[in-house]
Length: 206
Image 1 (cartoon, rainbow, N blue to C red):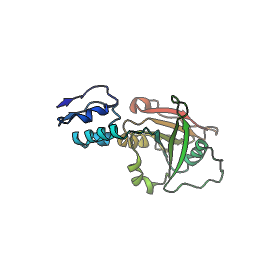
Image 2: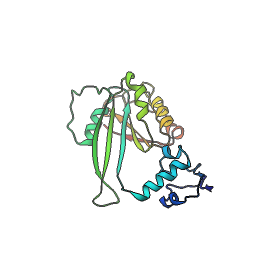
Image 3: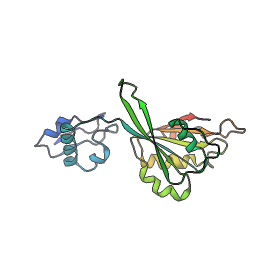
Image 4: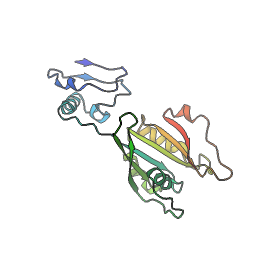
């Protein structure tokens, strides 16, 4: 048995996969552990060791992640997505049905010459898509929660969305983006959101 529980580990070295006599590996209590992924950890010691062995034999770094853009219908999710990906603004933009995925290549901030590939997921806000959308709300993603600042927080279901995201992806960062901020009578948000949702970060986009 090897106990690595209750530490501040971020990854497990791949050479541990070569410990052939190891039958019980305890990784619990490491909230920032990203490798092996949480899905692999949940399958137990055998799956973790197999992952580490495969990592040692054919490890290739891939810089790929997801930006998930969520919120109620007609708040400006698609327009924001287009702004991020360099597409032209369409004042007659129709509502998104289902989900659209666009690619956003970005230079790596610490590795010159390395490009990160971000998949930008633009979700339709209609109620009928809500049940299936939850399967795509996963950790290791950046969430942009879009809110029409002309509406009250309760009308934009801000806390309801924060509850859904934190339940499905408790470790993922959340950026709340306010749209329509250039229009009159902007609404306000509850001041205790950062205390209630530790992963929440506030931002504005007009």
